[in-house]
Every structure is written in C-alpha cells, then in structure tokens.
Image (tube, rainbow, N blue to C red; front, side):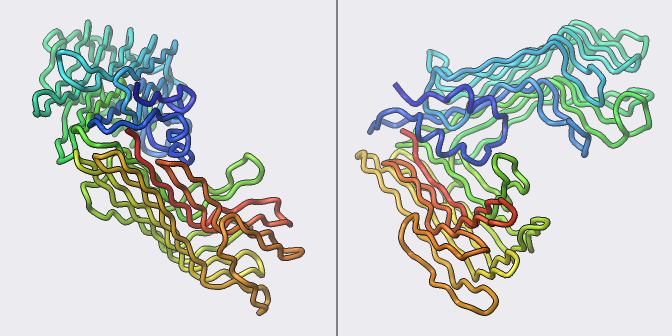
Length: 407
C-alpha cells in the first residue's frame, strides 16, 4: 500500500506549509520499483482575496503529495462567512483519489444549500466538481457547476441553472459574478483542473462585501501526475522566526513542490528581510528544480542569504542545498550542503563549525546551531543556521532546504 496523508496534515489547507515535507516523509509507505502516480486536490467552501481580515480558505478538504489512490478527505460547516456575512450555508467539500476502470485520477467536490449576498444575489442547490484523469496514456479533465435556483435581485433567471463555462453576469449593487468557472492546465508531468461554483467581484460599495474584494465560493482543484518512479517534494525558505510556538516572522522567499518543475530552475528572490526588533537579512533567494518520470525522479532545493545581522552579531553569506532522488531500479539518494562565510561580534571573529548539529555559544548574545539536519532514506532537510537570541527568547532559522521522494 502507498503512503497515507495524515488527516491532521491535510487539514492545514491548500498551500504547502513549513514542515509539511518532513511529515509526509514520516508517513510514507514502503519503497516500490513500480511506477506510481501523484495525486493532489482540494475543495474549498469560501476564499476571499484582496486583504480582507479572516478571508482565508474555509471548509477545506485537501490531499497532497501522495501516491495513495485511496487518499480522501471531507469537511463540512454550517456557514462560511466573509466580512461577518454568511455567504454560503450548509457547505460540504470532499476530495479523493481513485484507481479504477475510469483510470487514475482525483475528483474534488464542493456544495452548498445556498449562496446569498443580502438581497442582491441568491443561488440555491449549488454543486461544483472537477476531475483530472490519466487513462491509456492520455490526460483529460472535466469540471462543472449546477444550480437549483438563481436569483439576481428579486428576479429568477432559469437560463442560468446550467450555464456555459465562465459565464459573467452583472449584479446591480455588487458588481458582477462569474458562474461555472472551469479550466485545466496540461504539462509534461500531468494535468490539473479547477472548477468554482461562483466568483463574486465587488467593484461597487455595498454593505455585504468590501469594495475591491474577490470571493470564490465552492472552489475545487484536481491534479494527477503521469506515472513515474516516484513523486518528488520539498521546500525552501530564507528565514523564519518564532518566540516559543508563536511565529513572529513567517518563511520568506518560500517555495515548495509536489511534482517538480519539469527540470527547470525556479528562483524566488527578495531584496531584504527585516524581522522587527530581531534581525536584518540582506538580499536572498531560493531555488527549486525537480523532475519525475518512469526512469528517475529527482529534486533539489537551495537557499541563499547575503548576510544576517542580529544586534551586534554579524553573519556572512549563508547557503544551503538539499537533494533527493530515486531511480527505476529502486535506488535512493539524499544529500545536503551548507556553508557560512563568517561570524563576528563587535569585530571579534568566531569559528564557523562544519559538523552536523554542532553548536557555538556566544555568551550574552546567542546560541548558534550549524547544519541542523534531519535525514531518512528518502528525505533530507537542512537548516544551515539556527540562532537562539538570548535577550529576546527568539529562534531564527536561516537557510532552510528540504527534498524528498515518495514511492
């Protein structure tokens, strides 16, 4: 049996988050020389864009980075809110992988008894679904949304119960909506499809949704990768800081993958990072490069930092790299690299240690941990440097890279 995605992990949401890679590796199944498929997908009740408070994804069901064709998750909620308004009621989402006579694929669904924006818009019995499939060497997708009732203002519009894909409709007092938004993208690695029940665009002032906000209601995505010797995954970021369990600065220049980049190097750069009252980080960037096919799967993540200053502590350029691969004959490889140019405090130079998980204590300033590594047969991660700032009870991770393969 292939690896199972832990439900607590899946509940995190759509986007990969820091720590996901290592959790996946810990829950992955036994090695297999046979080609595997990569399954990913999600269903979301409501998601708002445009800076609205508490506008993140709600009622999320997701599977990600798994080769398990029985992976599934579901979620439901009485009401999904935007701007303290119950936009969608009795919301249910689910996503599941499959391997049957239809092929290998993923189906994601989302439904709501009704979607309502005051007296401006009322949709009932909304059901949206999308599927991505690989069968007999071919990739395909389907997506669609149906409605039991559509009312714009006080006027019922029966012609919109089964709308054409991406139907745009003006809604007086709100702006406009797009019904049955669907699409798909095919690549050398596989295909993903998406479907959204209704997207609300508030471009006039109203009392329900702040002007300038875009709200996707019943949002789904399904993705299947072509058969490969393994599925690649990993992540990288420049810095992250926290006090105990409280994150005071999230991962910067963050990148992740669940299927590679088709062998292309993707770079994410930042001019500088300022962690208020803690640290200043110079120009930095991360890269990712991965591929997966029936002969080999491999992925590399890197992190590069020009320099870091924490109070009187100055650290020169920091670089890290993580690599993982699997060949069709079942051979795995993992490796890491990291280096730090220099460490000084008030002009005094301290040695840069090269051992794994080695430490340096600078009295009254900080404890430094070098090459913080987690290694398994199919996964490796490295934090080039971890700075424990004594005076602030703050931990700063610099130069994180992780890479792994599933299958």
